[in-house]
Length: 432
Ligand code: SF4
Ligand code: SF4
Image (cartoon, rainbow, N blue to C red; front, top):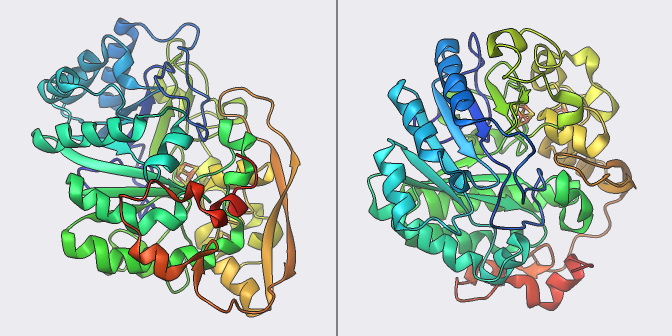
């Protein structure tokens, strides 16, 4: 894992003797209204941790041996004391990063981040202009994000970027890779949009599992041709995998021969919500995986209790569906728990897997999500899907990425306002 880049979104290659990485939502207040926001952020939670409670948490994380803390929201900078918390983290010798939509990351906030010792800020860019603005729920958010990138790149901090991959952004990934180079990004974290929070209300945004057959070769091409030559590191999220011909090439550190070794929730990482609820991973549904309040119980005790203690330690015997029969079951354990849970209602069976989709393809089949339950409408909620296998059908006459000609995808420039207006995109995204 990188010393500089938030690692919860990176495939785990080892799990040490306790959580080393924490993603901390310090407020749920937000200045955007993203359509894929898992926490349905907007307003602060009731009873968010006070400054003193936050500083106490920082001390506890240090005692636990945590090496890196990423502050998120909502928007972390909308809390008045965000840089005080960041300073406390770095004063204890832990790395501090921030993930942001960047809409209000002005010169003053960048300066405060530098003064607090923040090492990396990762700005979310979810497509070209119209695609990004549509998903972020605010016109002008794309330009604001690029302005924030420029400010960070000019500072002493490291600029990273992160992108959600879904039906709107996938055909724009090549153009985005060029854009990241232009703005000076040193690292690119990518992850699949999964149906949690507001994204659960927009099932039409999601990739179908069989779309991974187009996505993975595209990512390899982008890494080889657009990123590595420009010294931009690609960090595929924990829901972009698993095994098969792309594992070595895509996974960060792949050349060292390491490989995916299952979910690290509670073992390698922790997530903390702004009212003090602790989880094994920030992405997990709160109702099922909330492990108690840090203002009531020491973190060291909470991580020894269920539901945090054993989530990442499931065995092949806990897997079900296709994953229960998989050759890689022992080592993979159905990949990302969060992704499996929000798709299928519980972990242990994960259709967002390239090995699985390649196997279906070999048998002339493809796997499709079918929604059977909608989400209730609270932070970190989800509905439920099943999957169906259907005939693969004849090979397309021309190479396309979600219906967009490959030649057009490869030639797409940032001046294009976004694939959203193109007829093929309207077909991909049936409800807008
Ligand atoms: S099918 Fe399931 S267990 Fe097998 S590699 Fe994919 S996610 Fe892992
Ligand atoms: S659920 Fe597990 S694999 Fe998925 S992001 Fe969280 S820690 Fe990583």
